[in-house]
Length: 351
Image 1: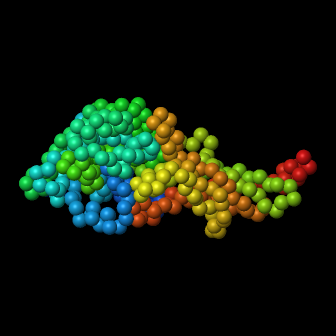
Image 2: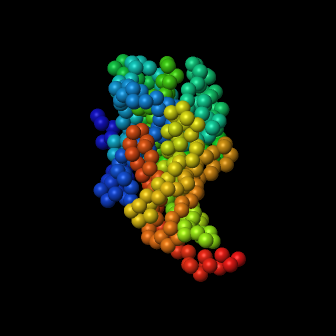
Image 3: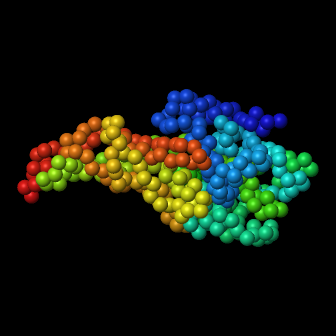
């Protein structure tokens, strides 16, 4: 039986709402692809799988296949989750008669530098060692551990109960805070680990989107300010998040996570594209992705500037393009070009 058919009425309603956004565009390019890429990326991140290139992805595609009750759009994203809810996990193609471990994780684990050894591979080869590592990683919920097994055919069917307990890090809550969600950490995750090889099983890892949470993070914001130097025919336009913004350039966080999985440092600035009207202009604008140092969470931040003719007017569009798991994605925000009155420029010259 296809476990996806076991979805609740709430999950089917969510599925329809997401489909309406897919048809309507929702202001994003290919929302279904975006959702699939985001969820696949965070499952890879939490499962500890490096982006080793096309060969590794092809091998994963030929490996086990898992479905999850309450998931939407064919992704491992389980929606309308509440503590105590049972998520039915159904897998085929696993090693026969093999034990596995499931553990819940805050997605803060994907951006905490101290957790990078866990994500990029460890030398743990025993169950006590793995349990000790889980207990020592504060973004993982050590009390959420479960131990399903496959049968002689390599099939696994298991009902995972969403825990009411939390990881020991008070910032690593499940569900995530609104600030974390709006920064690109799109839920919490349940990672599957093979207890024979002690390697992650990406196909068996899924993301939990809790009841009342948005499936997509909201659009980012944009604020512009302009200055004109004396004797200049150009103005410098500074870009930033809108004052008091509660939504962020969240795609930068996911791109940073993918860079880290690929062996890079991650966390570096992500350039944005600036258009005035239909024309792309050179800019020094970028987004710093969300960061976490084990105590303080900092959301993504837009900053930088570009230079245009002093009299330039029109709509400014700032876009953040990214390629996640081979899929091109973009988020953007728009504002009218700020006007710098001639009188103000003259006054600045006199001063």
